[in-house]
Structures are given as C-alpha cells and as structure tokens.
Image 1: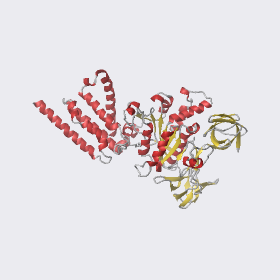
Image 2 (image 1 turned 120 degrees about the horizontal axis):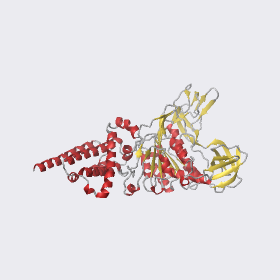
Image 3 (image 1 turned 90 degrees about the vertical axis):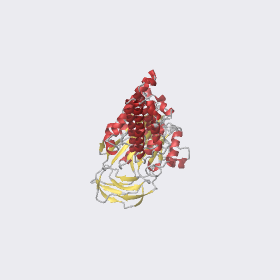
Image 4 (image 1 turned 30 degrees about the horizontal axis):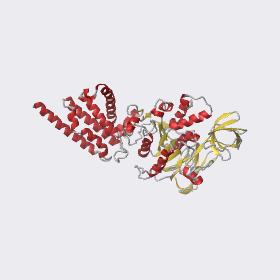
Length: 591
C-alpha cells in the first residue's frame, strides 16, 4: 500500500509528500474520511491531487493512500435508469445512506451487487473469443438488453459458460483460457475514464440522427456518431432543445450529463425524465436513459470528470452495438472547472484565464464520438451534443471558438428569436452542418430523390430574404418588386410554419422526416406557382388575399404525422385557387 502525507490544501487541490510511489492519474483516498482524489501532477516526491469531494475538515499530516490504479468507473447491468454524480456514485443510494446532505467518503459501488439478473448465454464451450466478444445477455430494462462482453484483450477459448438462470453481477458467468492462464468473467468490468475504449474500425458517419426537429433534421442535420454544439446565452433554450433531442431522437440510449448547471435546472430534469413516456416504446424514458448530475454547488473537480464518466458509459453501450447520444449541459461549466483547478495549480493562464490546454481537452472529449465497428463486429455509435453558455451571447469567447474547431455541427441559438418565442431558437443565418453532403445519399434513398435539392432551394430563399430585409430597411418594403415581395412572404411562411416548432402540440413536437420533406416541398410548390402568376402581371396583393400562406403555416398543427395525404389535398387546393385567380386575370385583361 502506497502512502503519502498531506502538506498543503488549496480548495480541491491537495499536495502530499512521502515515500509512496504514486503515478499520474492514479486514484487515491485522501484523509481519514478516505475521500476520492486523482493524481494530476508529480514533482519529485510531491504529488498534487485533485479531490472529488469537499476538502473542508482535512488537515495537514493526514494520510493519502494510493490504489496503484487509474481513476476508473464500474460498468455492468444496472446503469440504465440510474442517476449518478460526476464520479459514478448512485445518488439515490447516497441519499439512503446519508440523507439529503451527502457525507464525505461514501465510496459505494455504482452497481447493486446483490441484485439478481437473468442471464442467457449466447456462446458455447470451446468457442474462441477476443476483446468484447458477447458471452450472453441480461434484460437491464424493458427496452435495453445488456450484452455481457469479454473485458480482457485476449484471444482465448471458453472453458466454462453459465447456464441460463439467475445470477448476481459478481458471479462468475464464464471462464476463458489462454496458453498462459485462465480468466474468470463476471457481469462487471472496470474502465479508466480518461482512456478511450478500443474498437476495430472507425466508419464514415453517413446515417442521420433523426431528432424530429425540422430545423435540425432538414436544415442542419447531425449524423450518428457525429459531434454538435449548441451555443446560446441565458434563456435561449439550450436545455429545452437538448431535452427535445433526448426525448425524440432515434438513439437507442441517452446519457444526459448535467455538468455544473444550476441545481433547479437539474432538479427539473430529475423530476421530469422519470415521468416522460418514450414515444418509440411507450415505456418510461428512463428505461433507456442514464443521468449524471453534477450541479454547480458540487465539488468542482468532479464536474471536470463528469464528462469523461458519461463518455465512458456511452462507449460501453456502443461496444454492444447500440447508438448512444450524449447531452452535455454545459461544456462551459466544465471549462470553468478546468480554469479553477488550473488557477489553484498556479499554471500560466491563456485567454480569459482558461488554461492553455483547453483546446486539447476539448479535442479529447469530442474525439471520442464516432460510428465504429467493434472487435465483436457490432456497429455502434456515440453522438456528442454539447451545450455552450457564452456570457452575454458572445460567440467569440474561448470555449465557443475552440469548440467550433472540433465539432461538425453548429446550432447557434439567437436571443432575439428566443425572446420572440420562436423555438427552437436556432439562427439559420449563422448555423451550419458539415454532414449535409455525407447524408445526401441516405436522404435520397430513404426519403425522396429531391430532398437535397429542395433543401438547397429553401436555404437560398432564406439567404435572399436576409438580403432583401437589409434593402428594405434602407428604402422600404413598398419599393420592392412583387417577385421580391413574394420571397419575403414565402420566407415568413417558412420561418413560422417550418422552422418554428411547438413542443406543446402533439402534431408539431415531433415531426417524422418524411413529413418534414412534404412540408418543405409544399411551400416550394406554393412559391413556384405564385411566382408564375406574378410573372404574368398578377399583383401579389391578390395572391395574398386567398390566404394560402396563412393556411400553410397552420398545416404543422392540422396535419398529423400519419396524415401525409393532406399535403396532396392542400397542393390541389393551391392549384385550384390560383387557377381561379388566373382566370379572373384573363377576364380582366379581355375586358
């Protein structure tokens, strides 16, 4: 057992000295309460430790015990539906042990080792196995089967496999023999949080993560295994948008990380998520969700680790062949934790006091997302969506700018849109997605061959509207020609009827991608038909009198997700009404 003794205490940073041979990133137990810490710096015989709990009450001279192992978390059945703190301690169990106010040194297991699981083997005696080969399954929740994997990086032979039956997570369910030794496998495995779990091959991310939010799926799509950021000031709806994605996306599993957020926001998540019904399965959403709660009043060092804890859990389920989506809210608070610890270490600060290694840490975090094929040939993905909270909506601050370097989707939230009750408040003028070209084939094969072409037309119209609005500010809208006024009217319908979405309406809170295409195609047909009449000299005022644009806006509420035929009916009505106007015009010209 390696030991050192405390010589300095500076908030969550503790220095200790002695004969113990500590290594970088070793997990240690600090003081008489044995609170968890991690070695982050070594100088001769002095070890600097960041502590994941309150250091109040610690004294100089107290012992620090090394575990001779990196900071690791426990992986196995029982994680789904649970709520953990930043170092994977189950909060419900902590509350049962210490009440509403957590005591220090409660180093409890993340998984209930007394719980009995029904194990079904999927492998036979004599089979050859390697890393992450699936040995069997247990039903972890109503919708997720935990595939028990071989945790050892070995090529061996199965010499024992448990029969179907009920076992505790710590029971031996398989034995694997190599030329050197025999390994015993339980349902539990450990993994260091700062080390990426290995895989066989990284694949091209060319399948969209469908969220049911039109401004995302159609305008700025994200791929499974992709990375995205949601920057926005206070009150712009970052958390709300992440909640919508968590509820409606077609990811198999959601890992929601409340990283340094206000306690009341995290309380809302903890209260709401168990009540939500998963629209895909009809079961509670928690049956496929893992929550990591590390609020702003919890120890700052644990906030820094909570991101890595969430990613490691996501990679564990990815290796089983699941598509996992991580919601990190917010990475700005995570970066602030880095800044605070860096300041206590007296490191040279970079821009706005953040450490110079902020970009490399962000690269490490977002670099662990991806669509991969595992050693067991299962294809799974980790999609990373990080919220960023720039002060005063200043997108030029370091966290936003450095995050943009490592993500492929930018959903910039606009406070003016949010304050005008336009949700999601994604500003289409500054947002972008680098997955658009990679996803073209999928949209054409699965939705419609004209999907990408129609999307480009919508984007161009919105760009023209932006230019026309600038002109109208100078000379007034009345000076514009009728075809320019038609662009403004069409884009108003696009903004209100397509980009704006209501979470309170059952037909609008989630929109299937096929319905999104029909909505997009319908407004383009209306624009094209109206433009032909304007080119024949019919004034736009007459076209607006019919009320077709207003009726289009209401379609998002009036057309159910299984009533796509109503778009054809609307298109027929458009053709009929505009034909009447055309006939009126001919008659007027004749007279």
